[in-house]
Length: 249
Image (cartoon, rainbow, N blue to C red; front, side, top):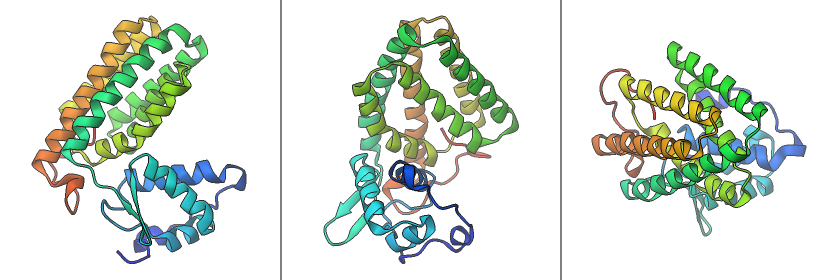
């Protein structure tokens, strides 16, 4: 890949990043480029083009790349810059059970520590997410889904657990984003979230833990199925659609 972004993306004006939140915001935006597929698996990261796009110098950009490399989203090669890491079926088998265990533990902790206000916030996000599901608005649904999981993790009030979770979250998001999901599986995922909300409202830690772990296990099966029916991240290109109107886990 040339040290350049695709014509459509470069034509889009992007607001400069505020200096007060430069590092975290830059990491988040770069992570989104990888997760959402604007930077292809195996491709070299176009540092010059990204510096121009976000209005930053190479020093903060490279610091952000180091963070994403620590999350397993990038590979740093001596004297060759960074490339986008590929995901394999073996990666999925390793990551999803660990993430499921982390979320199960977070659910148990959260039920003991979450406030009524935090439950209300998650409830509101859930209903917004369901509305996006009804409208077939996948990107909006996907972002709220991720936010709900993050808020449950935050409510656990455990810094070590949060650190481990965030170390895996980027690759999990990437795997979910590239996977195709049928309408039936999307409907099932929404029903699972309804059960998750109910357990959280009842402060039923054991039930919430089981539901979150099962939810991750089902996501893993959807992603693995997509990897088996298409090249996925482990080869060039994106996976082929499975069925009509493919959706993501």
